[in-house]
Image 1 (cartoon, rainbow, N blue to C red):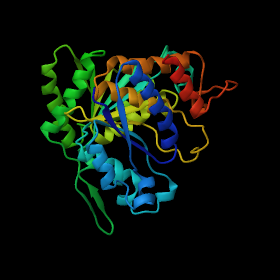
Image 2: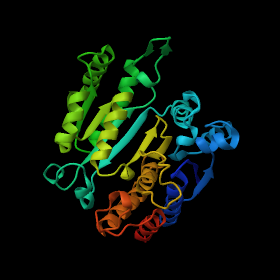
Image 3: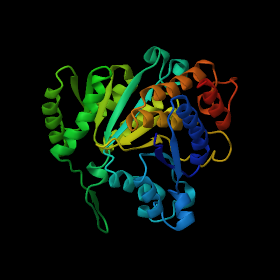
Image 4: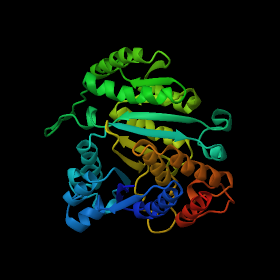
Amino acid sequence: MAARKIAVLAGDGIGPEIMKPTIEILKKVGEKHNEKFEFREALVGGAAIDGVGEALPKETLDICEGSNAILFGAVGGPKWEKLPPEKQPERAALLPLRKHFDLYANLRPAIVFRALADSSSLKKEIIGDGFDLLVVRELTSGIYFGKKESGADWASDEMKYSVSEIERIAKVAFEAAMKRGKKVTSVDKANVLNTMVLWRKTVEKFAKNYPEVELQNLYVDNTAMQLVRNPKQFDVLLCGNMFGDIISDEASMLTGSIGMLPSASINDRGFGMYEPVHGSAPDIAGQNKANPIAQVLSAAMMLRHSFGMEKAAKDIENAVESVLNKGLRTGDIAKKGEKILGTKEMGKAILKELG
């Protein structure tokens, strides 16, 4: 059986630390399911700037093109903040990767595990035993990729969407809802933005292809309010690029720690880039303090969405849940008085649960 090729872009800050145990976990689950993985490491972000002078070298792009998926860590940090914006790690590496591979669909699950319900920033009576929602964010169009202009005392950013771009991200959201709670909340600002009028009209028309799925239209400001009032009302949130960026970050913080949340960015061919939602956290880099769970769960999403390895993905997710149920915690999810595990130790604990 041919090995599945994975481009490993650990990046900066805590990226290499959380990537190491994730690779070990993938090796273990591969052995368990008789699958082989070939890990192909490459420089990206600040590490690439320091090494070869640019955030996304051609060699790295070539390795990604020759792989079946990309496992991404994190990029950026104060060291590179004085560079021109277009050359900084985030803008010069992440955005080009998304555009190059047409990774238009960003999936960001926000899950409060039962064992971590007390860690949420929301009251217990709101969280209950936890919640599980999915933000589906359009990733390669909208205001982030629109025409940008500026003068001495003005600046503008164009927000633009086509019907086809809206339809293809809507399909991802509705297909996901069919496997979940059969409800899609489409997030827009149709009361003031022409782009969002088209968004709402297109989504409403597309929804007729999925009569089993309930469609709710909600303005983005109301969505932000409802997320902190009653997040359990949501199943799948369908968002444009900028609104999805903001809403998914808000949803992630309601779970108690951004260190718990994975993401997937995929295209029509099943190729994807899988990365934790959090950043490079340079303040704790190299100290064995980072929570590796978001990176580990991102690897599980890779197995599910790019490789079709549902059982292997569930094995990893179940191992993470088992570790949490046993009360094992990294510093970001620990309550006062609880024993804190380091990055390495948490990785070993998840590895042990895989059997």
